[in-house]
Length: 471
Ligand code: FRU
Image (spheres, rainbow, N blue to C red):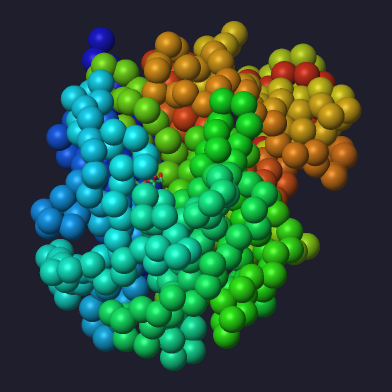
């Protein structure tokens, strides 16, 4: 039997070897560019490069040559995360240059910092005119302001423009406390940066990585990935505050807090504003190693999600471009479920499904199922939480380290559940009640785990499913 690859079709993965954080997500000369933290020599984290892909529709990605390599004295141990902005016909890149004061060798044989305190970080600059070749500035543009920051925890610059100025937020931690914060900078020319302020809330995580700040429908949204901000196995989470940012003083009035994704491995997301004025977010789905011995890649990106506000909170939807990859479909209305119902639909575990369920008391949906065992999505009218359990689709893979089960927050709507689901070979993204919450999960199904089964007694008001395919 020829083993089919578990590589997703629509979720960006590295051609081979290691991928983490999205970087430099931008729109340049009519195409989307997505860079990412990349180790090109084996599928484990090592000296960071910037991998590079571009796309016309955020779904079909073309891999391009490596954009940044750790080849300067000041970034000799890694080109860490950062962002990109277009201005004056150039794409300007901001990244964190890393040197180690001490290093050691990991189990995979890669050089890593001896401990997290041995990072020496500065913010550095590069640009491209053709979108393929990159030129680095010969020295860093920002050193850590030692009165307020710690150079071991000073990384991930995100740049944006407001009126005639450029602003940058950099992930950081308090000097004297185990508390995350961000440093804000201002510039009129993208090269000379002036320190403006430090922002913290002090309540979550001991460092804030990958900050992002943007305006959405009249509110300011601040995204960050706090180290040790989570619970259970999932230590690192990605979350946001709504609020308002004062561009004069550089302070942020915090309002509501929530998570960006309630699944297992979502981290370090980055947003961009595209030419259609959509705020689009891409996150990294963490894998620790390849899914199994047949795969030579580690890590993937989520599908690009469009952000909007509903009742003061973020709401998420996959970009519409995915719809042009819909192929055969099946639609059904008012299906009575008596204990078990199998959806008779041919697919290769890459599909989109919309489901509207009238909750009686129990509802369970199994995807990637062999009839008995699959990925379980369940809901009951007492707890009013969507529970996702992947225990039976891990199949001994060590790539998934963040546990077996996750729960959504309690839903307000009691008897009507809407799910929009994107399954893609080894990953699933579940959008709950019109994108109020998202849960994503990496899975490792066996060849025969392909069925879609509904259990319980809750009628299905509406089912729509499409096979998704690339030509
Ligand atoms: C987040 C992160 C960033 C850093 C990068 C290094 O996952 O730790 O803070 O720039 O990864 O690869």
